[in-house]
Every structure is written in structure tokens, then in C-alpha cells.
Length: 269
Image: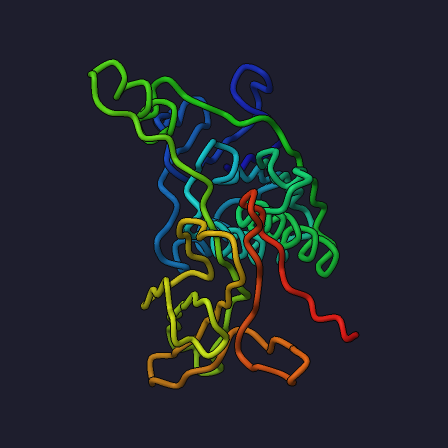
């Protein structure tokens, strides 16, 4: 959500508000209140930032709802921050859920912390005033995509209710092509560093993150390969070090018995 002149409706009656994203609200131009979906094309997003002189942006993270959608969060946040850096007048508030503060490290907490770190990096590099606010999960009794709405709707209709288990979220840095070609990713998760036993594979991924179920306790290896429109491929990760040397293009992590995720950091004995 983008807010101009720091305010909203009756709380700050002289404000102008611009909301981008999925919303049940409707545009009311007499109240200086504009609602529209998040642009699918970068050119549309650029036009919005050129047209409106925003002073404050409040970004509602996907992680602000229980079992919120993971896909696309990092890339969408990066796009918005890249336009904010062009104007030193925009203040940014990033509203997110409580998971980044969890003591236990899981795939989701790593992803949430990564989004927060992205905000901090842009703030530091481009002198953008950024504030990160962690709040309890939001829920809705009317928004049909909300997790709790769907769960209680299923209960009312007598359907079987499925409680989602903890998910494993894999994310990586965005790759860039010097010729501005489109890039897609291939993600593989295996039980061995030679990737002979692949337990998860996804091709044609457009954003730098995927989600799958948490596997059983044990050691796992993940590699991501970026491919441009010309077919040129490059590994997204650097290397994983063992006593036998470096294994390039992969990372290693462990799933503990209590479903925590621990990255394997090599320490030479």
C-alpha cells in the first residue's frame, strides 16, 4: 500500500491513499482513495511512481498472515524498493509477521529474515528511511483467500479440514542478465551432493524462491541454476566446502528431529 501525505480516510482526512494489491476495497476518488491490482508489468509500476509523488509507503508483507503466500515476495519487494531509491523523500514501513523473531530456525523464518534484510540493505545503500514493524498475524472473516476464512468455511460446510504442516522455503539471490534477457530457475533438492537422489525438482521458476514440504530429518543439498532466454546457464550458489574440498553450485543444510532447519557451515578440524 502506498500512502501519500501520511494519512488515511477519517484518521487523516486530507490524505491521498493509493493501494496496490489484492483488496476488497474499491476506489473512491472523492475521498482521494485509489485501489488497483499490483502491476504485472514493470512499466506499469514505473509509471505509477512517476505519476504520484509518494511520501510514505507501507508495504504489507505476505508473511503478515498465517500461511501467507511465499511465492514472489522477495522479487516484488525488490522491485518496489528499487523505485523508492529514486526518491529520497519516500519513507518506507515494512509490516511483517512475528516469525523472524522466532528462536528456532526454520525454512520460513530464513525467508522472512531475508525479506527484512533486503529492506535494511536498500535503506543503508540508498539512504531510504526504512522501518520494519513485526506484528501479530492478521486474519479476515470476509477475505476468501485468508487461511482461517477457508478453514472455518470448510468446517461450516462439513468438509474435511486440512491443517498445513511446516513448509520448507528455498530462496536465493536474483540473477541478472547483461542483455536484459528473461531468466528462469531450476531448483533441485537431493540427499547427496552428486544429486543422484533428487527428492524435489522444479523447473521454469520465475522468482527467486520455491516452497515444498519439510523432508524427514537428515542432511540435504540444494542447487539452483539460472537460465536466460538464450539457454546460457549459471549456478545461483557459490560452493559447499567439505574435508575433501569444494563442491561448486550447491548449499547444504540439515533438518533436525524437531523439524528445525540448520545450514551446514564448514568448520575445519
